[in-house]
Image 1 (cartoon, one colour):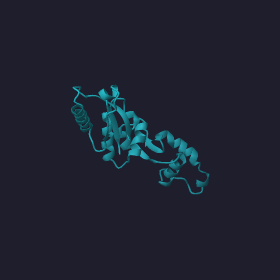
Image 2: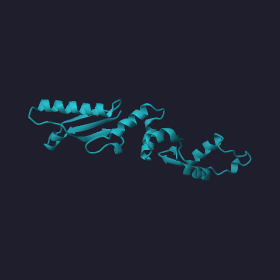
Image 3: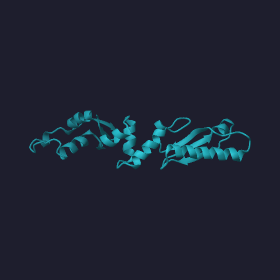
Image 4: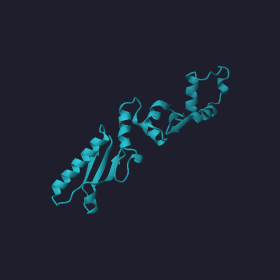
Length: 166
């Protein structure tokens, strides 16, 4: 469950910690901004000190890739990522690996090949699925480690997740 916690910036600078945690799952960026606005309006109304609360600062976040969070906000692209995960048969771990490799959401969806614990496993799968044929009498001599290393030039890999290079 993705969440982010903000402090009211006016109060934070003034030495008070008035914070709120927002659940992000299933929201759009605009809906999230509306929630923040409503919270700050409520804080302003409750304090009754004549000060308008309209700015916030990020305090903490959970299950949000760090490259989507800055000191003052969450990147709208995070909400696009969440929507892509919701509409995909790939799980969040696959998308997080693709993001770490700098791939676009479309590239992640289109180029994901699979999870392999190492290059040897990748090579074995290639052979098992018949992408290359090794005569049975030569199979004991086949070097899966070298073949896996050669195959890896055609892929980008992060944390065991392999994506075709385009």
